[in-house]
Image (cartoon, rainbow, N blue to C red; front, top):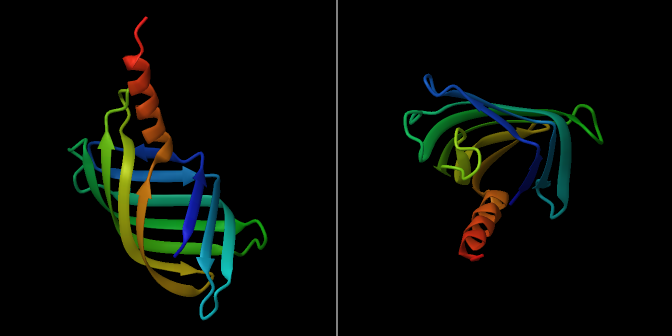
Length: 145
């Protein structure tokens, strides 16, 4: 089991070709150390991800092979992680910024190398901030003036 926290994740996609990239200036990752019960955490400041969306013509879902690289660690400058996997995501049309595609659910599986240690992984993610925004907006509409 592992945990990842991304802060200020910038997401870019070319809708015609389906090529995309994510950049984040701060990622905190926690992993169990091999053959022990201790948790190893890595905080990195150079984090990028490249992908190709097979369903780039669809707005509601995506299927993407993903290559990501995180490096320049806080506790050790040489901390890094490299992963390759396949991601499936579900999206909705945002309420405020209608020209963007907002992700609310993802699942991803693949191989990851963390400081020269290989891991297989399966990841499920929910964008809580987006869900809270949807709930707040729905409640705001229910209030009558």
